[in-house]
Length: 554
Image 1 (cartoon, helix red, strand yellow):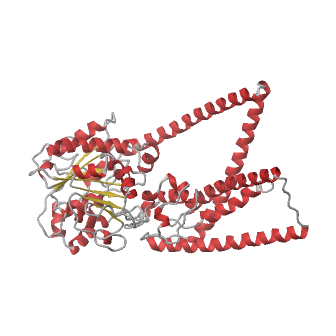
Image 2 (cartoon, rainbow, N blue to C red):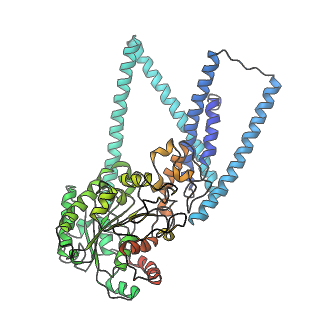
Image 3 (cartoon, helix red, strand yellow):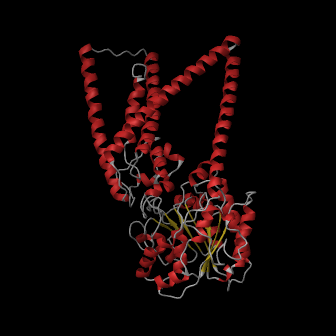
């Protein structure tokens, strides 16, 4: 392998290996290191090979030759080996120490030595295997072109026929493989969707979809919808924790119809809201789910505790795929589902008496935040239609999020942008930053409508963007992260794969870090709703009691 490899490519691959071990947002598993090492080395090998080829070609053009005594060459070679070994050992120990720092920062433990050894060796083997595969394919393509050229002697025509034949073959293969895989995944997810989570039972309250008198059957809600309507605090639990009178919260939900008509599902949710007299409550929240229809209980239950149950939550399913599958294969359904749900409910709500209708809020976590914001053309449009919103862990590809972040006040960091004076829209990286910016300056009074963007500086879902491949983002350059390693740095291509791998386990971090948003949502919702009568002690009591009400999991 080494004998036939490009020297420039090998030097580049070595740099790629070093950069792959640099810290990112989440402490890594062995397979994350494997992905980072393999992808970084492949890219760096190709880059090094191209640079070496260009330099050799340039040397031939200018007739450049460099000669040296054999002894000098040996000395230079062994000095090079020593330097490579010293740097590699230094990078190895430095990387382990950085992973320890990341682990302490996000409170997620790892076995660093075994993880890095196994991950790095597996990554190198994967790099070699892919390189050999590329050579094999390249050799096969060359043989194919030679065969075509044997029958078609004209170079231009032969090349055209070869390119068209190769493109058709690749297209056919891609369609078969991708469609087969997508159909298999969709079928599996649909099967899971029909299965009730163990320990979850049909609600006995008429104020829950799927319960007595509901227009929606228990089976039609799907697995995540069943988890949602079966979860949540009772009036007695709310009363016990807050010490105040409480009502039974309303939860309206519709699963994905057999014909996948999202407008039908949205109208089914509206029917449930009307049936349960949800528009007589003080607060109505339109909640946008993630891919499989999952609802973040920390967000919904926070509202129910804080309002004494005098609220209703409306939500629906738009896909059978989980969030990763929907993110990769179907980014339109979250947007279409959010638009359908919001437009149907807002259209009915807007016709009601403003003095008697509930205050209208909207919310979503992760892919739900991405889809939910698409119901609005801009931030101004959002503020004109709702009394408030809580967007949690918004993906970096969300258009309104990007527009707001790009227009932030000069001097405010990307992890916590200041929009205007912070009187309506606030980006919140942690509880202590609800009423102040990243540098400690207090915001003016929070006026209605109140829009909150909750995002951890260690959340790779928020910071992942394709542009990581070629451009250093502000959140790395500014070094303003709250729960991130200050030594994190950007490397073309490698950083993209590091953050991509981080996304896969971001929810494994404990609440308050990564893509796990838990207790902080109680304090954020309290500020957005304006529940000043709820004391800090009561909020802490809610945080301790809320997990007991959750049935099922994401």
